[in-house]
Structure formats: C-alpha cells, structure tokens
Amino acid sequence: MDGELVRVLFCSSDSAFAQVIARTLGPGYEVRTSEQSDLIATGPGDQWWDVILLDLRDVGEDSGDDTNARALDDIKQLGDTTPIIVILGDTSDTLARMAVENGAYDTLATPPNMAELRLLLRRAYRLRKTEKELIELRSHDRTAGRLGEMLGCTEAMQQVFATSRKAACCDVTVLVTGETGTGKELLARAVHRLSPRSGPFVAFSCANLPETLVDDELFGHEKGAFTGAIATRRGRFEAAEGGTLLLDEIGDLPLGLQAKLLRVLQQRSFERLGSNTPITTDVRVICATHRNLEKMVDTGTFRMDLYYRLNVVQIHIPALRERRDEIPVLAHYFLQRFAKQFGKQSNRFSPLALHALEEYNWPGNVRELENAVQRAVVMAEGQTIETWHLPKSLHSGFEQPSEVHSYEEEVREFKRRLILRTLREYGGRKVDAARALGVARGYLHRLINQLQIQLDDDFEIADAEGPTPQERVM
Image (cartoon, rainbow, N blue to C red):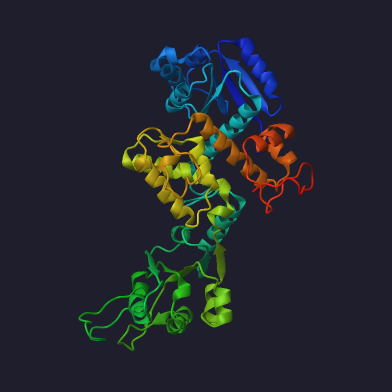
C-alpha cells in the first residue's frame, strides 16, 4: 500500500479550511474540494474518489439527531459505498457515535490530528479497495481471482487457481492438500465443473471409519454378502460413473483398502463385496488430505506406490493466516451473502471489527471465517457489524459495549493494534512502518509510548535499517 495515491473528496462549506487540510496532508493524497450541496446536485456518476472527508463542524449535539443523519444521508444518495470520515466540531462521545451509526467510517474532532487523519484515510482507502476487488471477483467467475465458489486475490491463491484450471482439462488424478477448512472440497468441485466430464460429482470422507464400512461405501455389496445385506448396493465408484469421485481425508484410508484402491486406479475395475464379477469404471479420482502423506510413507502408514499414483498433480491450498490480505475480501463476500440470505441490513464492518478479523489467527481457516461472519450477521441489528457481534474468541482484547469504555478508548485500542501489525509486517523497522502508515517516525515513536505497547524480547523495533535491542515490542 505504501506509495499508492489516496484520492480524497473533501466536502466542506469552508473552502479555506479545506485548502489547509489538503496542503497539510502532503504527498500521497490527492484532495479535491466540493460543496456538499453541489455534490448532491451532481448525483451519481464517474466517481473518482476513494474516501469522502465530510466537514460537519457546524453540527453539534444541540442540533438534534436529524441534522446529523440528514447530512450523512445526503452523501449516501450518491448510491456509493465510499467510506466517509467526518470532522466534528464537538468532542462529545455521543455525537461521534451518532455519526458512525448514521454511516460514517470514523470521526475526528476539530482541530484534526493530521497524523491520525492520515491513518484513517489509509485504512478507509484499504476498505474501499477491498470492496472494489470483491465486486470485480464476483463479476468475473473465470478470472485469476476466482475459481467456482472460491475467492483469492493473493499471488499464492492465483497460482492455485491457475494450476487447478490446467489440471481440470486433463483426466489425471489430483491430490489437494491443506489444513482443515481451507476449501479443499470447493476446489475439487471447481476442477470437476471445469473438466470435460459430464457425470456427477460424488464426495466421500474416509475419516475415522472402520475398514469394512469404507469398503462397502466405496465399492458396494451384493445381496446376501453379509448378515443384513438384503439387497444389492451400489458404491460411490458406481455412483460417480462418468464423473468425479472426491476421496476426502485419504490419509485416514486403512492400509488394506489402500491396496484395493491402487488396483482400481490401475485396472479401472473393481468387485462388489460378495461378488467375483469385475465392474469397469470410468471415474476421475481427486483426493484431499490435511495430513503429510510423505511423512506417512516414511513411517509406513501410507503406501508409497499409492502415494505416487495419487500425486500426479498436487495442489496445496495455503492456510488463511498465510494470506491475510484476503481476509477483508472474504469477510465482505460472506457478509453480503448472509445479509441477503437472512434479509438483514448489515452491509459493512466497523473499523475495529474488521481489524479483529484481520488479527485473528484462524485455526479453522476460511470455514471458521464464514461461520464467524454468519453469526455476526445473525446478531447484528443495524447496518454495521461491531466487534461484539463476532464470536468471543475473535474479539478477546477488543472493547465491549456492555462495559464502561469510552469512544476514545476504542480508538486507542484500534491505533495500538494497527501499529503493532504494521511493525510486524515491516520486521520492526520504524522507518518503513512510519512510511507505510503515512506518519513521521518521531510521531510513531511517541504513539508507541503513549499507547503503552507491551515490550517483549521476541520482537525488535529498529529506528533505522537494523534492529535496536533497546527498543522491543511484542
């Protein structure tokens, strides 16, 4: 994000004040000013801006709720989702919360702290960029950013999608690896849809099932094959004839069945339980696992010959924590989907809620993120998803509305986590972190002290190019 130009539309009736703000922001920001009434009269059009900066210094608590609401509603008439940062003349927590509830991304009191304003503009710009990427991904199903129901804008995911498209056109076995919840089955379905096969897609999980049951599920049985077999039963291989069979958690397949599966893949035929008549099969097999099959081969718990037979094309889906830039895109995608499904008005995350999503480690990966957003949409009553709508595990350490916390305390916590994350991204180098945040290095150093960032020996902050042991932060 460092070096990208943030385009700001400053709506103010005080042209002199707007010009001062524009000059003070400095490089990296393109600011154009406009009367709010002129902007509304123009209506929707070719909107060049990324963020709207709205001057409401004349609106005070004594102006009433309707005055503030109307001022923000005028901007919303543009039919745009541009983040709005409001400059208020009143420092009241009530008025600031009122502005956020009526659609503002965040607020600043007069006179605005320029370093804080730059931080907010950069964060708002990132939100706007995420929303644009989401719209583009949803409108182009076969682009590098989307594969079936999977979204991905990072280089790692684009490589996953490109490999999947190449493998889909060739009738070979595919091994999909990745942690639980990364979307292995979604990828397998996408490969099937892109393949020339016209048969069905059938999925079966081998996890924690006894060998006899897995054998019966995969290959079926004849009538009378065992006690209770009152009729012939077709297995999953027959059900997937002409199509694709996904064997999920293939690492849990018992050793006895591994040999049988290898014969099926090599000979393209099998026998039902209780029969000696071979049945030919035309099925493409895709296997998925969260286990390390190479290590299992070394320990003798997975057949080497079967591993090489399955591993013609291997596609590894990285964990969500390894592609954090995609968290806002995925979160907004799930938000829009569930809001529409449940008939809710929720259409955005508060800055603190979005930051909580970005900071969480996501051991359950995309599936956990989907469930978290679904819960938030259910719990939310207005347009904005707040931190307290998220599962408790996500907002641990973030402020709660039920507790006595002021607006300033919430902003303080937001700043602290933003600075911590930026320092981590740049290896503790304050020069680079300050440049990315758009603030002076001295101001960043003061913020570290003012926000009482906890010191830790495992992370180092460097004033220049190298780390300085005397300044450490978590």
